[in-house]
Length: 385
Image (cartoon, rainbow, N blue to C red; front, side, top):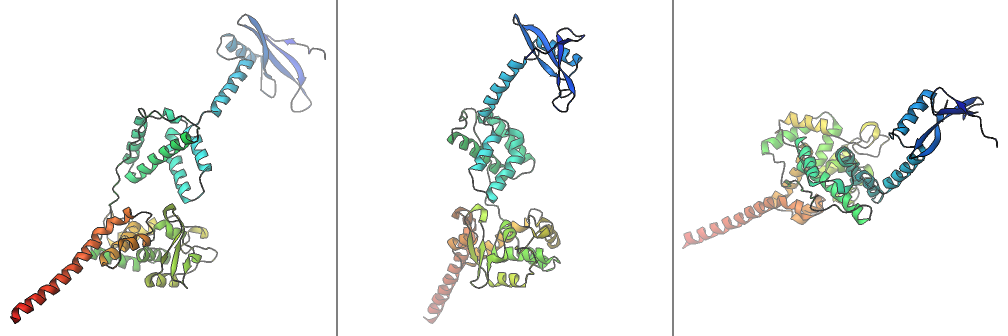
């Protein structure tokens, strides 16, 4: 095949040949540059007239950069790109490790929650870093930042624990090197798990009345069922009519707090709420959200009820209703802590122990009743003598 004819341009070291355009039947110019590098002549393509919008002036500028060593020749650039690609293939950043971590975990609410935490709090800070590039100071700054933003200590702990899990996963799978413990130590914030939502009798009466006065039947019954069963907000969001076993008297709870599905008794108060609650056509949910989809929030209505009842600013309505359910049972003296743990679907007894003092008080009162009765008997006996 005969060599293509070269045409000089007004710029030294720049020429072109005519070839068929990549798109269409017209001809186009293909520009080349010639220069010396390390004592040898280098001749390489600069670009096509139409496809690359190449001009003699642009080709001359490319040549000047390569002569000055500011830009690599085509061959060296391709080799560098291949080397970078190989390096990237072995570069397990936290974002890449998270993608692999997710692929090894079953889909579900827990994974969705973790993904939300990663995208919102971790990725912007550590997403493109290797585990060995993260220092103790970086983790301390993230923890302090979250707390300054008003996030709870529990939220900060979840975020830091997620980073720790991702790194541990990468090390266990042989995808990345373990960080030097002298350079990376993750300090978890202290979490007060003993916080409860206490109301005095007057506040409780106002709350119940505010629920009764709520015009939104969905919101009112949502909060009634939370009070009568102690179910979590997320469990009520997921509650479907098929989960309500009216015949056997049970409510099935799907994956409470990411755990195994369980069932709790449907007491008379809960049954009355469910039997009178309207069914929304076209949705399986007891308390559906917009368009019949699963509800994702009850905050507006619960805060409205809280304001109507005149409750303290720190009172969290949904947490409070669950606490009221638990504390009422514990203080009755008729429910042991193991049964209470099952009713609250706590995975461990540690969370339920916060109510132990209420049961102790109930037992103390019962013991006092016995003591008073025996004291009366002794008094009567002494009087007889």
